[in-house]
Image (cartoon, rainbow, N blue to C red; front, side, top):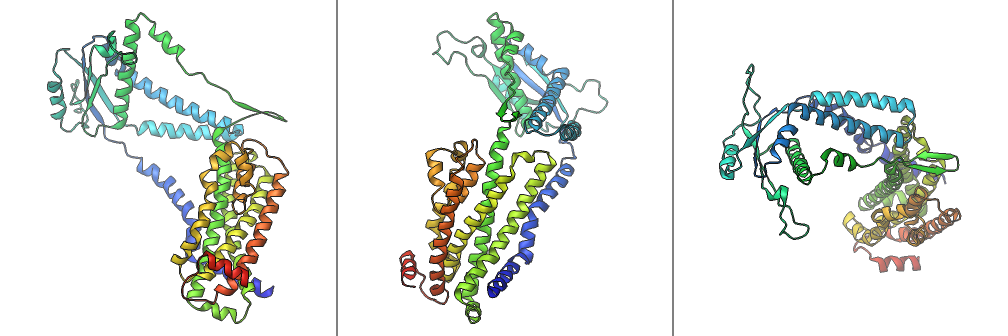
Length: 483
């Protein structure tokens, strides 16, 4: 065992103590921190002002006054305040749904107010007028003014009492049929369409505001012509708010659909990344030592079995390090936001158990393939069919998560090689699973590990000193049977 641990320590340090690994582990947090730091600096400059007018050809005679009112300075300011209020309300509701404590919610609200205030200060200066053209105005004539507008984002002249309408940035053409409709039209196509023509590269927010206000004005005009109370109908059509709670044994608790999906997915992807990262390191180091003939020197001091076990344990420690670092960051974030109850401690234990099972299976397979081939291209040929099986949990994680007790999910829980990933998803799913399936799946995983270790040891013993033509699956099976 002493030789096995010496090899394991050497394998661990050969990966974890390298600059590339350290840089790779620290690179994502550094990039995230840089983005958080640099983004406010990049956003610290106001976008160019938007100054000009919107021409309206209203052949119905019922929409233009509403558009003039919609783009009055007071109306534009009210819409901006409403958007800010909706953002604040949505974030406050999300904080409450996630179960954050009052102090954390208050802190988030304070930071949110600062961010919203900064966003308001950096918002583009928009000065739009609505110019109503005579109904008989030709569209080509009106569009020509857009072509001649030139530089449309120029600010109004400083000190001018009335800078005028400015360049024409857009043209809205509303035919009578778009408002009053046609009785002769087919059902579902009673009302005609209107045209919204804009200058090139007009700010997307301005375009969106023009489109939404034109749609609203046309619908309001239709309701008014039908003799309806527009304000009352708008109020009746507002979406109702719902307060969702989950009934638990201890009472009721707020729910958050986002966290219900994010936490289980994070568990599975964390398991996947840690297992395959360490397995990939094992494969590459085995191929490199074999191709450089270093393997022959090592085998002069240890047996093939000791070498394989040492390499698996050493790279497994790398996987544990990856798992601990990233899961630690996630748990720290949950504690900071006072939502640590979203991850029961039992799930962390199960994550460690299923990591050990998943890594042991993948590591045995990687060690056997690495010993049997001469370069990475040959290894990819042998790994292809197995990888198709291993991606099943990645492709079907959402159906398994939504219905963890379905027949498909239960069957996958006992399929060798993929059952650790499936069980991690099911344990964090939307409903509890039968407890007996947990030890049963662990037993299946342990049996898979024993079989893979037995088969991989035989392949490793033969393939580690063989060169030349790479083996196929039939050859590997023959090695297992004859060794």
